[in-house]
Length: 240
Image 1 (cartoon, helix red, strand yellow):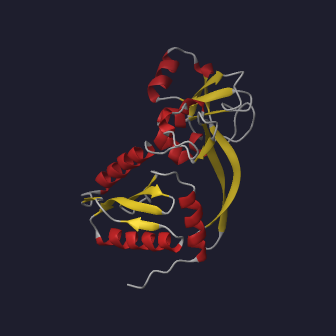
Image 2 (spheres, rainbow, N blue to C red; image 1 turned 45 degrees about the horizontal axis):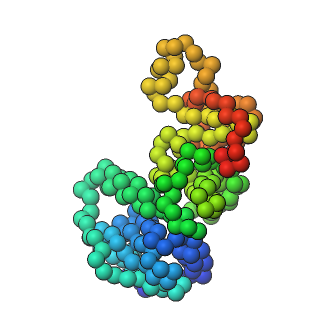
Image 3 (cartoon, rainbow, N blue to C red; image 1 turned 180 degrees about the horizontal axis):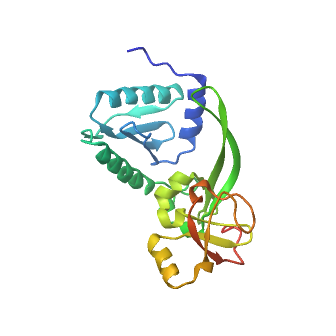
């Protein structure tokens, strides 16, 4: 096996990524079988590791990257577990573990648990376009969205949509508010049936890439959904 070497790009990413996480924050790189926890500004520990040679190799690489930016890795009473028996079991384990991790996320200013905040007041906000590099060397622009979650200490945490989904669940994730104060809430199949049976279709709207009233961008995960529309005039600044 070739010796793993860090690059300047890796160091820059690591410094920003690890500095932005709060004490006791948990990081589980997708598909690696590893989970780490930040115990101080310069020390992390592994708290969960799959019993597999590839996972051990991944851990050595992450440790090397952390050490290159002045972070110590502590080994101790980490929980080891056997590889899943099937892809379905692997997916279920990964999903459950990610949701458990989300419960530990805290405000970087006061360290209050984010799951305890008023998640229903956070809506997706368009942040701009970002150019990403594809495997074939070409580039592609993608939309960048975030959820702005207001803490009781007045700090606003910007949360990635996938992370907000883990934190808040399907109902709060599948909605947005347009600039006119109209809430678009994705409907369940049961709700759509009830609306059809009540012969009251005017309450619902099918979403494309643009809002039907304001023509502004719609979050991509809402495209092709059938939503209930509710006027929400008088939103406070943190709700808009």
